[in-house]
Image (tube, rainbow, N blue to C red; front, side, top):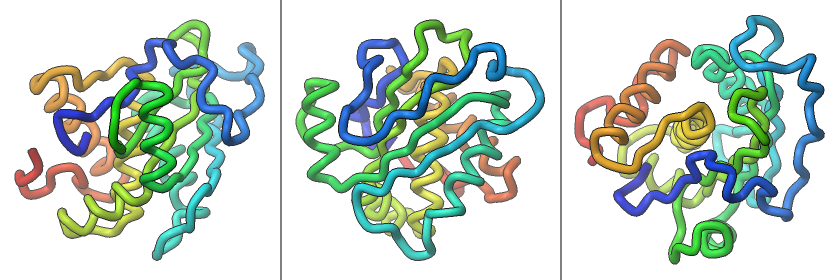
Length: 193
């Protein structure tokens, strides 16, 4: 998402076990949770492995992400969101993607079948989010939500493997955030690469 070297996992199942450094949500009952059925929202669990930001993410990010997930057609499932530092993200990026350096978000799809309810771990780098938020002139928590939405879209089939797919994905991020009443965050002024 931040540049051409973004290596968010597209939910291909390569890292189905996810990182083992934070709690994973329990397996949902497939009879209770499924994609596209109106009803209860996606359960979102936040795991802070670094300091929260101001204004705080706790109590805001989980509500906003569940709301955006519903707008994206994901009405049931479970997302665990780990918020980490650059150093931790660099370690995870190397371990799970074989890439050097940090990134803003990694998605770990825990489902056996993409048709099952969403069950995933998202890892978001607060340092990268803060840097991007400052560069683009908005609150860090909006950038963190953008990263979470980016990870969610990977889980439901979006990819940013080339410029055309990336543009489509980023348009959808801004559409969803606008529908949620937050306005476009990725590219509100047409300045982001």
